[in-house]
Length: 232
Image 1: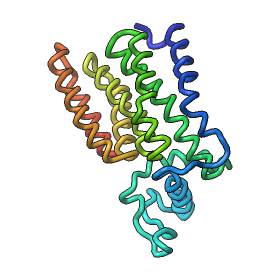
Image 2: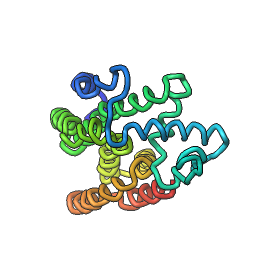
Image 3: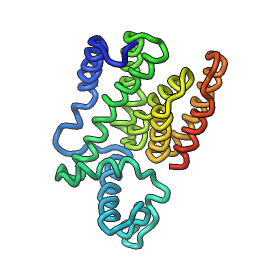
């Protein structure tokens, strides 16, 4: 199966279109109240201050905690705010930068799930159905509009990419797939460490499944990719 064909391109466009009803509220003016969404704006502002002051990697927040400061990004996941810096530096503003991250996490996760599921089922139709179900999971709506969990929303992009890489590496050796696995796993850990732990159970179960299913699995590159991800 070719990685891209006419049917694949059509399905990817469809995934983006179907994601629009989910993300359109993010393009309204202002910001709606959620459990953590407003804190994401505050943290992005502080990420900018730390990088501007030469903290690489950003760790200590000198402005928060009533001005006493505390090591915010030593404990809070930093990746979503690192991703938000470019749009903020392009003068989109703090609120809009956070809203764009929330919004783009939906179609990107759908596209990632399409390729992961297509690799598993060897079917474009299977990939499309899995993608639509993944984007419209009730838990995703809660993350976006109730909890306002930016970290989990970004992490949702990495789950299918990691599974896709495991499936590819179970069939043949590929340094490129191993590096993508490492980067994706690192991004997951830095986006939401608790979800990384919980997803680790699924990851282990899928690895065992592949060991039983495939005749000759490329175990060395899979393990090395995960180790590199933790190292990053």
